[in-house]
Image (tube, rainbow, N blue to C red; front, side, top):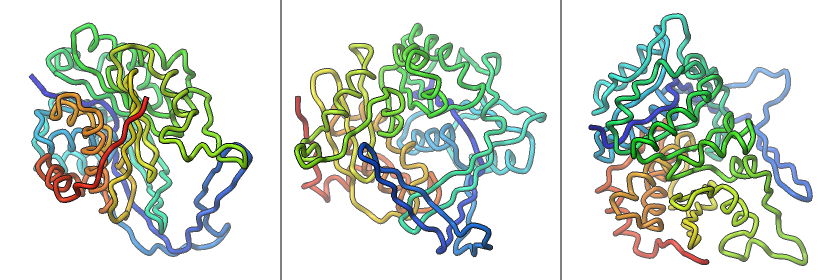
Length: 348
């Protein structure tokens, strides 16, 4: 039996950083948008370059295993130089790969990550085999024999299996964590709701939650200072719409502003755990998977689980690569002990 089985993407990630990148902010009355830009038509010099294995299925499997959980992963790759690199990267990882799918007719997922001087990133993604997971590819018996099914963001035709695997896991008393991706969200709330109904934990970032619920977080005005409230009233509305079952915990992350959770009774807020930021790639995967693992460790203490997740996420963003800065449970607990003023807050 596995403690956790993950399903999601596997990619070869190439990180590119250039000092010529610009961050452009655009404001409207109701929202703020930021864009990374380069001089049009120019030859742009690269200041830093590296490659790492990534993808939601890989990142979360590595994290769960690093946290001490017996872990298996389901992802789909081709039979090429990139798949060889992905499989090679698992040789020193305690992760069962018997459930991966390899198809020589497909190309392995590949991403170019443009990293800004602020540490944030824009991803140019070729989905490849990641978008072609079929129901027949999946070892449902492995899912049945797991305590937790972690569903990382999936894309393309692979989203067609989401309802089936979430239903199957729920029917077989397997705990489900659903980290919703933009491809699923863009199909509309009625589609998403069917998967939400089978999920015990749902994790989205604020932009995804806004897209899923069609609720936008209003900025402060002269008359109303929403930012002074622990939980923005529009976030509360998002939580209430996303929580479609009594047994669910909903988590919404907000980058450097921290993370929020709702269990139907209380709202939780956890500030970001401060540290150096080199690249934010993989931070969301580390946060969501650590939160799930920490819920078991802390006996369903949602606030503490948010703190564990924030500490581990801070470790990831301090290094290049989505799995390079991952911490063990002991390391996370040591950091919390050495930062006694770091706390979460709650409200009703």
